[in-house]
Length: 82
Image (tube, rainbow, N blue to C red):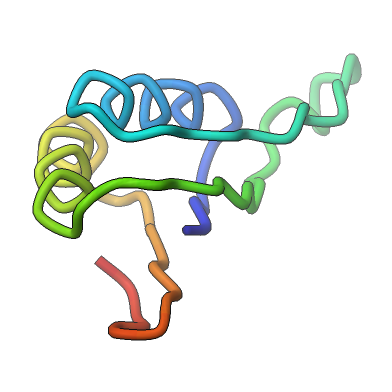
C-alpha cells in the first residue's frame, strides 16, 4: 500500500490499520527540518497484512478525516487507488 499526502497523516493511517487488526510495517521517513520540506507531499509505502475487508475499513475511517489523500493498494487481487 502506498500513501500519498502530508507526512503526519501517514502515521494516522498506520494506526487505523492496526486498530482494525492489521499488521503494519512503515519505513522511517527522512526527517525534513526546513519549512518548505516539511510541507511537501510524501509517498510512503506501508507493508500491510490483513484481510481486504479490514484494510478497506481502516481506509474508509482515514478518508473520512483526510478525503484528499490518495492511497494505492497493490496486491495480486487488486490494484488501484482508494
